[in-house]
Length: 193
Ligand code: ZN
Image (cartoon, rainbow, N blue to C red):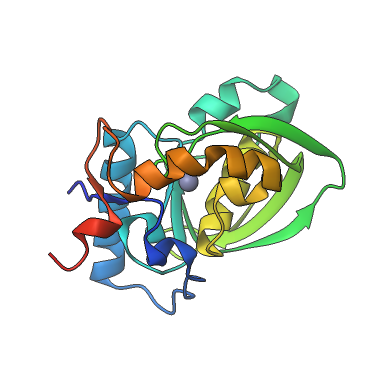
């Protein structure tokens, strides 16, 4: 089932998401719906808060990012899309790199974001099997972007104050629902309807 994606301005995007305590049919359904929604929106990643669920789950389709890497930098990605539950960043490099990032919750705003160029994530997959992934470059960027969502952080928060100030009119429009997206969204003004 395709779920509407919560837009910038929705308080759920600003919450720290809760740990997943146990498996349940509801959780598995949420994961399936998130995968459908990410595909429908043609996204590289989607975190549960973006569909209104403040839990520590994200899905990512790393094929695109993976292809842009040299073969030696490609992590083992056994299955796509990747499902990540209760992730922890166990290592992040001091070296940083800047990549353009967009966000399904902040449509139309693609901005260069500087992040550690290499991160190691420990997480549970959808069968609750512990896994580790070491992401480099664009893969690291996607993993950190989605991880940030679980902390209530958006890519625009990582810009300079000046860069953010420049985006303010555009952000205001998103908040007010004055944007067109090729996928269903829910805007703060729709809340409680
Ligand atoms: Zn995002």
